Image 1 (cartoon, rainbow over the protein chains, first blue to last red):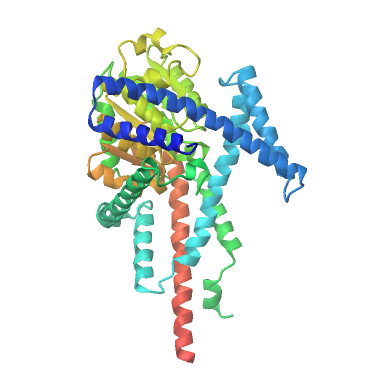
Image 2 (image 1 turned 90 degrees about the horizontal axis):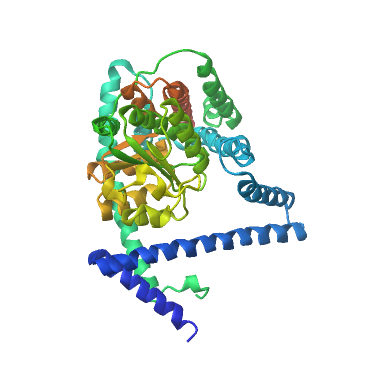
Length: 205
Length: 277
């Protein structure tokens, strides 16, 4: 019986949301708005759960001296610094919270992303070899796309036309097929959750 | 090891060094990269140009510091263009790392044009779970944003008088570095039929072309190149994206060169192996 109440809630909630989408009455719109309010509140509590989980895992690694356990001190220090500084001093420009964001967090994130350029260059050098017909097509396509950023004089026009054709014909066909597959997969998964076939969210296989 | 085999198996540190030089050197050399204006970027520009004084536009700043180099210039240019035309802007952020950047953008641009918070623009702030927030804004902005980013109740603001949901907006232009773009298309445009324009990072641009063709989005600004195109169209005073294009052009040329070198090494060593066999 303990497992059946959550399944019933999920089933009724999923059914209501599906019916409400296709039959928007004033009465169902009010319940829908109320449900959105509640979902956001529940979502905020899951965030608290995530914070507690991060704290617990980091603490466990420090206590057991797991490999690279020193970095967990930095994780916890950063977590508590932002948690305390934000409410204590405010989050406007010039406050300690924003100073940490702009002078520590932003450069770190931007640098991590910038490193990708080097790895991509190295990977492109090693991977883009015309070993087979398919590899050659990939190589030529990638080169045409990259050339659109380089001024080629009178060749710029034909190159832009080729790039536009690649992006709007074969790329679009493939992306549409993938998107439809993802959509159908999403519908199947949602149906499984609503009908109680998929119960992993309850911690049960 | 022969010369061509060495060409094929160049130490990656040489590649990293070449990339570092190709990023650093163009910053000190002055040259222009003429932008080729694409129809997708022009669509966004034409839409914003068609807005009149008093029209309302929702700008979603949903990128984090990783996407800042590509997306901040386009967000700044569009915000300036809107303020210059007297368009009322509603800023919202759905990415947990975006509030700081949106606050900086809003402070900077509003000061330049002497725009008043609560009258000419409002910064609604950040709420988690983007899909839910997008759905709730379709019903009523106040479900997710009873107060703005600075803690002021939105009902006390003149700009929010008579504003309920997407029906009161001309469009949404969302600047995305993640999957939230799909929610804008599926939920905001799919369910609530609001026009959606996207500014995305370069790697994401190819994924969203199908939506331009199907008219689920009215325009797409892709990456630093798209931002540079928009700055050119808008005749922007600050052209950080256009300056960045110098670096991007040179680095792309270097990557293409390395690919050519690698393939020359591959074919020549293959030919040599064929001869010896």
